[in-house]
Image (cartoon, rainbow, N blue to C red):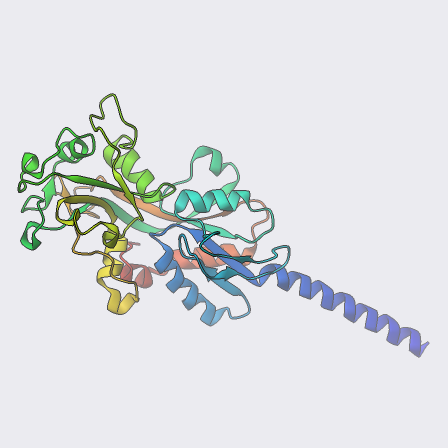
Length: 318
């Protein structure tokens, strides 16, 4: 009888251990991919959260990362990123990767744009904070050709990207051929700049778009990606939050990739202004699969959205 009881107790203990282990394996790993704009603030928030939630592995993978990994856990066999297999690069790329993931390797996507209707059918977006997207250029005081006031009307900005204006002296600047730049495909910043600020896709030629060539494409929020030859003549969309985090690199640890580019006003209104409202103001999000979402993940994303002091350091509003 004693032996039977001992055997039963051992079996029960083993079953309990397996159940706990299985649950822990599923909950041990939470990984996010996607937006370049929010990767640094999410990394800071992740590091802060781990201090009080050390039982879990919280990972925020940089946009387009060619190194690093998502650890194996539960049904996820683990993912290693390389030059041949980079991490999703941008909001749309992150959302698409989340939707396509069937192994539970990706738990949330960072997104600097709102969900599209088809995506919202199976995904939930948690607002992280506020940001703004504007044009940027090297100021005239530093050798750039942009207007001295560093202001463009909305009509002028749209005219630059549809080639109504091709020289900076046509919009109040110094003579120099304007070189148009846009972020990479899959970028939420690109999507937002095209749809909300410009109102059209400048990469689609013809019709009201008078350009003979498409704008040059670079990694978003990287003034350093603009060639030295183009630098003083270039115009480049830039996230206000990314620009702020880079300017505050001594505190944030974010590499300063501005390369002399300064955010410009539109119609005399500064990026982020709420009175009057700046046309490029936007919200940024974290996105997860609605069905079966782990409580730990939802708790983390909800907590992150409330950390206003950390968000402010990286240029995001409450």
